[in-house]
Image (tube, rainbow, N blue to C red; front, side, top):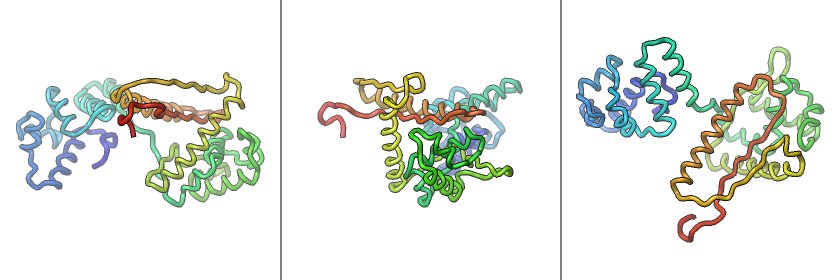
Length: 275
């Protein structure tokens, strides 16, 4: 079943959830869904067919049944408010809030594309194309890197980006990034990403000596916490990263390429509590 963020009508999402459970068990029925929501079967039928709305008193039970929490639960509730609102202006405001909760669009990388992560300069060259408005002169791009790269290395990066269709050629002949964000999964992909992350963390360490404080921001915290705080902070970091990606999408005239490395890891633990 598709994630809730791919829906704009909460009732369609509910109907798909019903159909999925029905396909898993022929015994699943409107009555069973109605009981879990605290409604009559006829009410559920009308809701799933767009003829009625889910009552406010049932929303918390619906979230539990659907397994929605955090951002996905907030999105689902905004879809309900959007569907029930009659004012065009208020509907627009609610929809804007809901869409802001969606993830940024990402292009999944296939196995043959993992070479993208082999050298951190490939990613930076791709981002530099935005700064240079698509002007792809290897010698100039190499001189803009920190630390500076070799012209042939940049040329190879541009060839790889074109081969993998991670950049597209405009009618003017300039090269522009083809997707806003990339993602990768699976064991082989995870190893490639880990190698890339090690490169970035090494650059982060070097940045302490390479750049003055006014053009960088490096800080650390050493904290003691319980399991609940640990889980909540991990979620805060994920949400922070998502919000940063959303903000960058609104940057229309970029003039620099920045690296952001977030590291949150164990330094000590009570024996038997970690590992």
